[in-house]
Image (cartoon, rainbow, N blue to C red; front, side):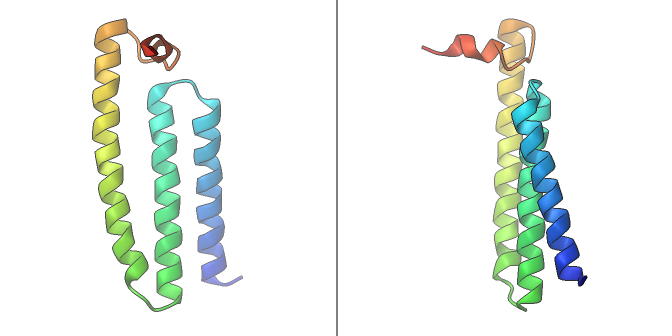
Length: 100
């Protein structure tokens, strides 16, 4: 197996773990960590493809994805703080009472 195949396999494993965490876990912090795993696996795949094609566009897109991930973390943590202040817990079931 070449290095490209191994890197893409690692990206696929990380993506699968991220999907499972998002779908199966009920803790909000774990869901946010699963989303971060999804984004990091996409970053790994982009960098590997851009390296194998000798193009820099994939690596430039990774910077945008990292910026979006940082903004997502900041917004997600602020939502968690607000949930904890209002309900005393950060479980995702409590957020269903926010529906109008």
